[in-house]
Image (cartoon, rainbow over all chains, first blue to last red; front, side, top):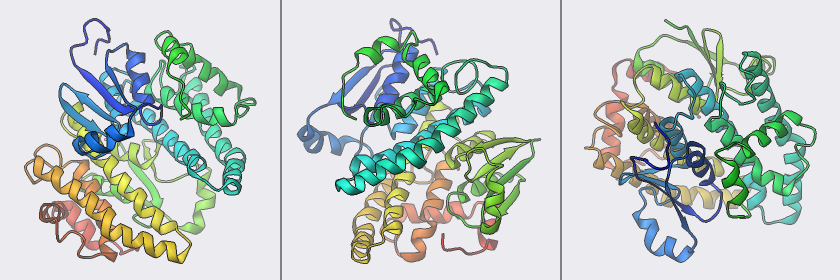
Amino acid sequence: MNGSKKDSIRKYKLTYFDIRGRGEIPRLLFHAAEVEFTDDRIDSEEKWYNSLKAKMPQRVLPVLEVDGKLLSQSLTICRYLAREFGLCGKTSWEQALVEQVVDTMDDLRAEVAKWIYEKDTEKKDEIGSHLRSEIYPKFFGILEDILKENEENNNRSGYLVGDSLTLADLSVFETFTFPLSIHPDILDDHLELQEHRKRIETHKHLADYIKNRPVRPV
Amino acid sequence: MPTYKYSYFDVRGRGELVRYVFHAAGRDFEDDRVAREDWPSRKESTPFGQMPVLDVDGKKLAQSGAIARYAAREFDLAGKDSWEQALVDQYMGLVEDMFTEIVKVFFEKDEEKKKELQKNLAEVVFPKFCGLFEKALDQNGGKFFVGNSLTLADLAVLNAFDTPLHQHPTLLDKFPKLKAHRERVMATPKLSDYIKNRKVTDI
């Protein structure tokens, strides 16, 4: 799929709340592929509950509209866009490896969400400690193993799958954004992961967007 | 022809969907069921310290969703083009959302709260998801979730209701298309043999 901003044949619209949340990885995909899209950010809860929700197929956001057809489920949207933009691996097996990372990062997101949603401050502190002592190390280990294995397969690209940027790299980048905002030091002893993050941050198609995107707590 | 070995515990859990894919496609695979006592020694050899794992000619894949989608693609059960693949995927996501709600109840330790959550599950959550599935079937002509033939989406919905129906046997009674869909998918030739003969487990 040719990703030129000037001649995007399809009309894409991404509808989500005005936060990063489950909408940010799809946004990153559009920017990485340099494909135009309408970044439809819903900033009014009233508008959502009173008029939009009933129109959405599964009554949830994000929703991707492609030439008038609607798609729900954030990871489905991610995988679809990644396939369309050639950012999902070059073979069916590589696609599976990319998805493996994305699903793993969704597991991490779910763990971190427990901290976000916990209202009791004591329990919240406990969850925070558990994240630091058990959860982050487990996921860092998995990612470091993947990076190492991809290196050894002679790709030496510094990306997670194959020799170029894929959805896997974007999902890792974005999944760490919130944890780093509450625990800024977690990558201090993980140089490879720091380098990987920098590689995404400075990617020629992403640098501008990442630097200038709206700052939101989640 | 690749050699497939699929490793998971001897339950349905997060592993059964992939077994459904292999059986529905009529493909041979080693159904490696790992006993709980053996798990600690097997853990090291898995990519991420978890199961299920699919071994394809020595290469390993983790994450039940990624495995299911990979197998479905290999066996033409994934939808006929990228958009259909996305639709199939969408229903898997909806199934996952329903599963998340069920799991909350399962893990709730406070007895009072658990009873409330179970009531909510039966009166609000299941009807909501059944309604969405029923509508989706209706919009696609009533027989399958995507296109005109069996896909991973149909298997995922079948699998999703296996355990809930144990505890709520009349769950699908108010959703005729969904109920008929279930019977239709369960009758898929090799799959129906597998389901008839498998060991009955709680999860």
